[in-house]
Amino acid sequence: ELGDVEVDFRITQDGSSAAQRQILDDLVAKGEDGIAVSVDDPDNQTEYLNKVATQTLLICCDSDAPKSKRACYIGTDNEAAGEQAGQMIKDCLPNGGDIMLFVGHSDAQNAVERAGGIKKALEGSNVHIIDIRTDDTDPVRAQKNAEDTLVKYPNIACLVGLWNYNGPAILNAVRGAGKIGKVKIVCFDDEADTLAGIASGAIYGTVVQNPFEFGKESVTLMDKYLHGDKTAFGNGTIYIPTREIKQDNVAAYQAEVKKILGQ
Image (cartoon, rainbow, N blue to C red; front, side, top):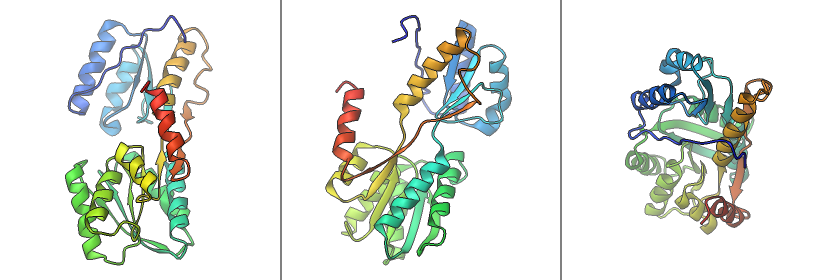
């Protein structure tokens, strides 16, 4: 749409901050006019990102480094997303009940904010969070955590997955235990197995982000800024709204995603 913008899209091979730094060093050396980065390790990368920000226009997309000198953050308000999930939990458990949360790392910023939003939404309800189980981003361990929870807490009412792979892992565990429909599932993101689970009624719902808009806004606003509009980033934080996907709108959402991806 912009016509005069060339986009170079890079992905780290191992998801490490060291690999990310190597890519950023390469882009800075090439003289890129602007970089949007999903930061791997905000606390330990801040000083390095500050250096990058003195050499090119730097914004954070999807994962923020709020203490850095980046010009803007474009992504999800994870606390608000957690509140959406919390409301879904209350909706599917009108009489309350015990629930368990699952995530890769409980101290990751988005995990802290999502869990905080859920707790805020559940205040005053009869829903009780037993604990939060971590899996170090290992889907196999994530499923084992859900399986162990179903055994240890036979009356558990709902399992809640905070990261994208947690939904399918929980679904596999609940299906394996023969408890589809008996144990509710609420999760985040739009993995294919998650959406299929919602369509079949096995998963109550998921909160989805809008990464398409993350990318589009990042490029569009960097272009405006570089063409002289120094107000392009507003106050430095741009939240892209999340959405609730349940059985009544999952088919329309799946069609929308396929259109975006040109499938």
